[in-house]
Length: 368
Image (cartoon, rainbow, N blue to C red):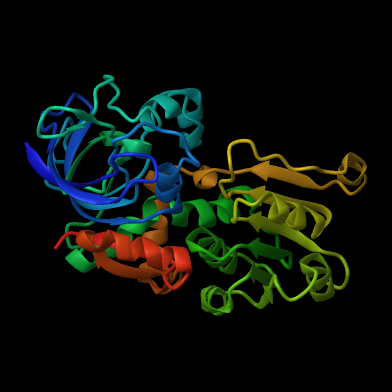
């Protein structure tokens, strides 16, 4: 069937709105989704500019929401949010670590359906890479594995469904890193480096924990002001002196018990590590270049019992964490809406420009 989609034809190419074909015959575990909205995530930009490798032409997008049109299961007609795909049966999935599913690469990074064929094609039949992180939801319709589908109440309004789309990646990445991985203890301190959508979610996640200090670090004052609204108790502009020394000054010279590095910059990860108190832990969740490496003094690591942990998608079960965050938001305890600004899909270039210059944290693309 014909649909509309944002197609990137080449590396660093334009975000072009086109009419293309989408497969509308669902496999046994597939769902055809009518997309209402999609958050624009930094990973979409990373794919377009080559930081993340992939084929072109392609339809990107991986923070979708919409309605199930056709199914390989019983959820037809349901309003839903989308996240990444997973097999649901391997050891990692059974243990609640769906992002480490044994079929994660096959289902999310091959840019094709599990059968090996793309879900999209040009009008002339030329294949268009699909299933980006299980979705490719920069389209009016997309085909996903049913594991990606998170059903929401039928009473969810159109406006709510559009807003909730952003929970499928960046928000669970930031909040999950704090809630699922670091799990801050009573009275502890935490620093969040980089206050984009993911960093803001980490701050909001920390605000749900019994910590004594939440320190937000960024180069832009408007983002630091936003961090305060998300729950930060202290903010540091990284351009105003030695960040590590400023953090230690705020913590009685000890450093922080936990840190979250959201910028994907090696220098920042080094700062986060150096800012740790003895037995402190830093979670690295920002996506750097593929060849990025960090240098750590091993004696310092051993002597002070510091830890560096990698974290992706909050190491969560999205079918549990996404509804949990949605409920918190409904109760005023996870105010991610303050990060968002809606744009019609036809204005995607304007949305991307606003995200790049920092005037908008989280663009949400909606169909007219």
